[in-house]
Image 1 (tube, rainbow, N blue to C red):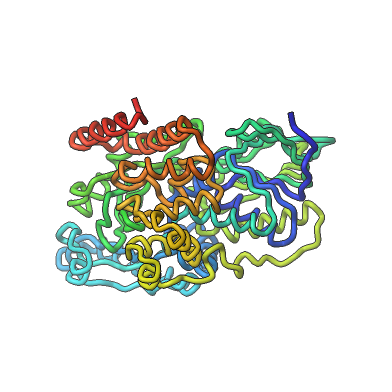
Image 2: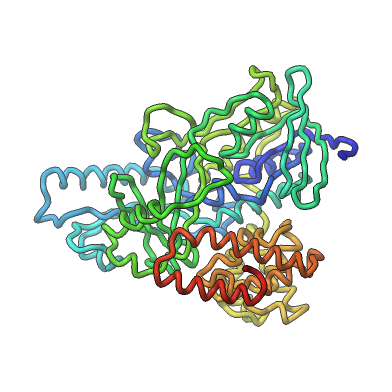
Length: 551
């Protein structure tokens, strides 16, 4: 049974970029905050996005404000997490050789150059490079895998990020500033008195613990779950038109350049390098099902491959390792096609619906999460009646963002593999030294568990101790455990034993957590398996069965 109610200024629901970012902002302004996430940080739209802090060139015609806001916030995010971002140069190919081009095609080239050139006005906000028109020869020199017969290309410049880590770092920063952060803990009921939301009851999914948190304001940042939560617990509406977006991961960096393509129905798509792999994305379809029951289909996989193959014919020679998907929380509008919906964000104050003090958000983009969080925090400070204080989330670095150490120097100093040091610096920034100090104390922790992601045993231990890991699957999001082409056969078992030792799991718990982690990978691999991969999958399942993990 719940004990004495806890009291806070604000309860934030949802550990995605908006929820964690807002909790951080409020805590930095001195408010008492409780952040509740029913699973783990970033498991919704944030972590299953394209993983880009980009300006949104496609929104310039209809949502110029979205483009400007995203570009401006990209610059701020680079300031607070410089280790976590990486540049992705894109090519926008121009069809048909110049001597064969029709008048319409020439007009299209000109319009493309003007359009991308207009985007250049926003590039300084995000430290982007200006666009360049490339000849056919220059285009093929940079990207020889493109289909023959192109007239050239126009370049544009974007930034990639590990969105799962971005969410986790915001939550950890919020905790550092005094917020109480609980993962695997769901809000069960909104408490209301006299037309006002007064708090929530919650339950921990892992321990069964229950509690009650009283607060002057509740922020519903639960993404695609927001409409159902507001309706069920407060009788309120959050107008939203969720859109399913599917991405594919390839087993290698197919190129050092992103390529913008067109699907069979004319939708814009891309193939881009991202960390140690390449990503193909994305679909955009209305979704009316349960957000907890989301999986890619074979048709969606083929739609993506066919679209990219029309411009990059050899893409099927790469192995598709997994298909993953999320739900965009786009603002509701009746009539426009899914990809034409606005990417603006909107706040919904539910006072008129008998739930004063409850605030929800819909829409928005990962690239603008910090600005959206700032606006949410401004509104919540006013709701709770606290004096206004300036936002500092664009000035204070996220954990590890104060310095980007030299990986080569760290590798030499601590005697670890250079590749492991480089990946560690990318994920941890200045905190890489804390991880490597564990290796100095216990050289066995210098073991590289995963060859794909160069994960050190020490990083697993550090994440469990310092980054609120409660389930083995949380390590998929902290350090990409079992995400690579090995599907966990290299790293999962030893990582489970390390995590179990730190968290006091029994042998049965270790096996159960390991089985759950491997099952999560199987759900992402299942839609992409071809004949050869099915054979390999049988071998993999045989190995796992031999370990007593699957049956």
